[in-house]
Image (cartoon, rainbow, N blue to C red; front, side, top):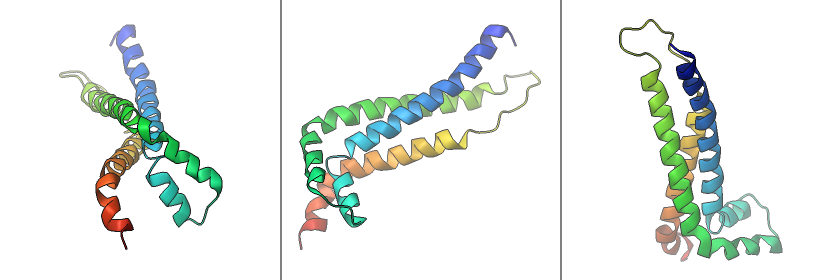
Length: 128
């Protein structure tokens, strides 16, 4: 393995963490107009400031698009790192999977799916 390849492999771990953090923050931003106020009310947190989250509703498609870019590149980096760990015919040690990055990507994906599905499920859940 040359020095350049080692730097690429080491840099992909940092990229994975950056993409997972971006995906998680984007998912929180995408769900902030709809899911976050309901979750806060469910936890017993209330206040007039929660109504300010509804002002973010027009920006939800932009948050979702940015989040999908972060999630897609994060999953791609995780997949690429697992394929790159052992090249054909070389003796190498398989690195341990970064469970925190994978967990953050899964949580962000669940939040994005919830944010997308909330608009369709809200009439059924809130119409009592």
